Image 1 (cartoon, rainbow, N blue to C red):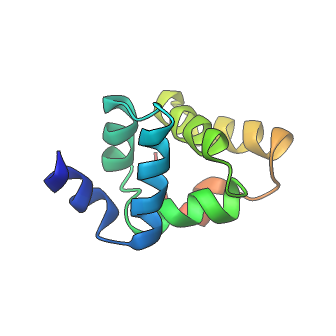
Image 2 (cartoon, rainbow, N blue to C red; image 1 turned 180 degrees about the vertical axis):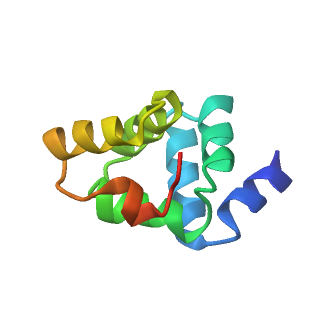
Length: 98
């Protein structure tokens, strides 16, 4: 598990902190890990997701990752988050192509 976490965080201190918070809150799951890997959300991108898009709110961060995992259409994720949390085009900002 440690090697997998190192790969995902790319030893970025911010990413390590985010995943530790997710784990500490009991929200870390295989689905979260697989989504981050599948969408290539790693290292600094994890930190940007948490800090810039989710306003340093760990529950919003997990919610966004879950939305990205469940959505077949990235526009749906953007619409949901722009309507409820922020006005950033998340997919473009993160460079995620679903």
